[in-house]
Structures are given as C-alpha cells and as structure tokens.
Image (cartoon, rainbow, N blue to C red; front, side):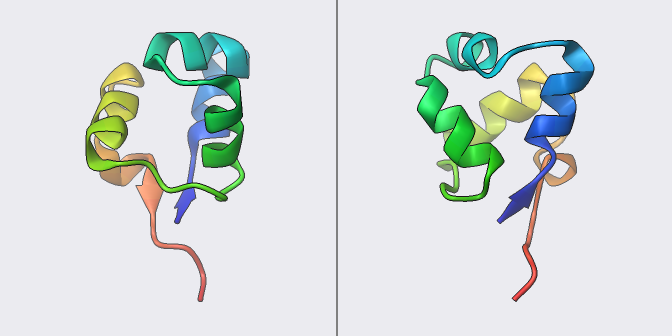
Length: 65
C-alpha cells in the first residue's frame, strides 16, 4: 500500500520520532509505514488520518501491482 505519510509529516515539520510519539508506536514502525514495508491496522490508519486532519483515503492508497 502506498501512502503520503512522509509528505504529510514533512509538511508539519515533524521527525519520524515525533510522529511515532504522537501515534504511540516506535520510530521503526513509522519508517516501515513510510517506506511501504508495513501496512497499518485499521485503528492505526484512523489515528494517522485523524492526526493529519484528513481521511484515510487521502493518506493511504493502493500501490502499483
């Protein structure tokens, strides 16, 4: 699954560690999400979208096959 997390995080001026603290996950989890190595659970996806003030569909979208 592709996502805009890195872009959204950068727009806020947050480090991966800051975003991890806000989401109550590890910095490694944020890195894995941003690089597409890990897909979030639905509750985590909702928390991410809420934190950025947007809808899940504006953060996460299907990747290229």
